[in-house]
Image (cartoon, rainbow, N blue to C red; front, side, top):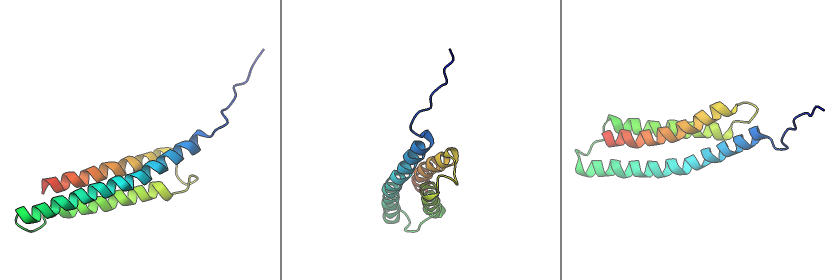
Length: 108
């Protein structure tokens, strides 16, 4: 007697895409918190330091812009146009770039 394996009723690809989209959406909240922390560091540097922003401050601001773009692409790209692996990479890049922005500002 041979039996054929049954497939699950749910679509794992759709569920994974939905989870990654919610993670990217939550990444914007994390980015906002990290950006506010970076602004506090910039203002503290302006008061305690020489009063001028350095090159690392400019780089930190640009890194936050890149993180927002990565999160936006991961969030709004249709499921048919992007596989799970690139979407996952963009979400990881969103969080990593947000942390890198704070680190760059700390280096200034």
